[in-house]
Amino acid sequence: MTPAEAPALGRTLLVAGLRGFCAGVVRAIDVVQRPIEICDGPVYVRKEIIHNRYVVDELREKGARFVEEVHEAPDGAWLIYSAHGVSPGVREQATRKRLRTIDATCPLVTKVHVEAIHFARRGYTIILIGHEKHDETIGTLGEARDSIRLVGTKEDAESVEVPDPERVAYLTQTTLSVDDTREIAAVLQRRFPALVSPARGDICYATQNRQDAVRAMAPHVETLLVLGAPNSSNSLRLCEVALGQGIPSHLIEGAGDIDARWLEGVRVLGLTASASAPEILVQEVVDYARRSLGVDSVREFETVRENVTFSLPLELKALLPARSRLP
Image 1 (cartoon, rainbow, N blue to C red):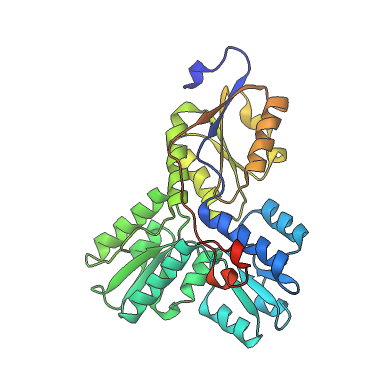
Image 2: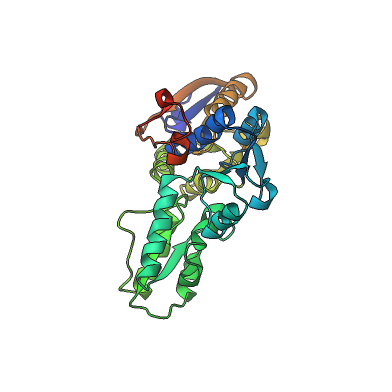
């Protein structure tokens, strides 16, 4: 449906059928909720379990205690690592404090950590495409700091130096823009013809699918709302993808963030949600749009469907009653 096909009266809201929680986020939330119910004593979580304030606040209300660093948890306490992963240094700190840890790191992030260790042990310089201050990047850097060079832009890729151009590999943060990463990788490939890439792409399937859905929606909407958090990389990338398609985009954490001025003259409004945004917030925006934004038609825009699931970490499975354990 194009803007010209909008109803003669009112406004249409086109909602991405593929949106919201990915398998890694579902797993991470479960990894916090279950220990709250079964562990002896308080359960601490290092950093935000995922980058979404609504989810973090909900888990806090259920009893989770969020801390920024390991030293804030009492000796011997339960501590959960966030979905973004941690460096070996963090694990060493936890061991010294005798913390009982449960690792909620997304398996796709763990894959990047394993690749970094693999290439470093083989004497490669690793070029990590990512954002310097993102929790995921910080964790990956910690696996082989002396061997890793971080680049975030094509300009960085043009200037990065390595000791041996014949032994260079690249990895990526899992939540990047597919297009931007491809462009940076192309610069690296030109500069280092022997460049080794990961066996399979590092960008998360859910990140890529949600970006593809935005690209597919772009010709059918005039403005896009992206539900997500300002510190969520995959949320920001969805906005960037829309802008790259010529569609104004606005990142919101909830319906209350919507500015009616964004919608002046807009007949077809798009809505999607990042991989860390809960469906309840989507429905709140839909209800608000019907009630306050002149929307009288809500339609889903379908692309692909996901059926990916991740099993719980082994240390959590060991704590669960036998009848509750997942395969």
